[in-house]
Image 1 (cartoon, one colour):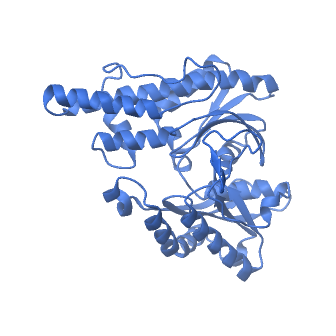
Image 2 (cartoon, one colour; image 1 turned 30 degrees about the horizontal axis):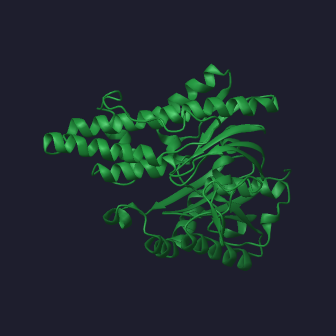
Length: 361
């Protein structure tokens, strides 16, 4: 890039309505997120119809606030980047239609961004990390190890064959009567628990490769909860904390071991600056970050993780991904299509099946 460009990013793939203004020199002028936790709390998870309606109501307000916080007007914006998938299709459509309308009115280009690429390219925004690097993308709906070769070039080394870790955290929180989202609730509860109190499985560690599974681990927590409840007529606060700590340690151990294996595959590329990066909502978990840091240190590989505000869904990462895609004249610039499914590595077989709407992951 030569002249500095200013991009408006829009994100609405799940339950956070977000807008941000980012410049090509990696300056984040604003990053606004309007959450929906209160709207979904009574249902124990995100309700797609409620999320889509809330996005439609909040998108214009969120964009206006992002512009105001950045000290910019729409006339100052050079292009608009928007999450075009994957995600809850109602929310994705809301964001895409907002971006299309703004682009048409302003006569500015609009860039469709893969939400997962936004996470995967975050280290480029925060640390100017050179390609290639190894990325663990770990969130509520996704978990995969990726060799990141360029803004639109990703090779999947492995991923979850069922639940993503964030999904497992949410389910465990529901099993134990903790509030949603489950990740922060389980982590907070685990602080007073004993991670060795309850023996839980470490799924797929006996299988070669980098694939993971977390569904059975969640079921093991359910069985242990029922055993404790039956033995004592209910689960005590300490028992719940022990369960949370034991579950969190199991997830951490699996991710650390699979990361060790993924690093071995990544190093075959002989990168000049070998780095393991982590992104996604679960990257905010301090124990998991620490375990990955230890794994990277043992392999003599650098480790980087974004600030907590850029781990969860946000529009700054979408704006940055749009800037990266502009530099390579990516076909995502046109046409702009909302997609419920959109794998980063389209050459690898789908891990979670496929259907009329395409590969799930």
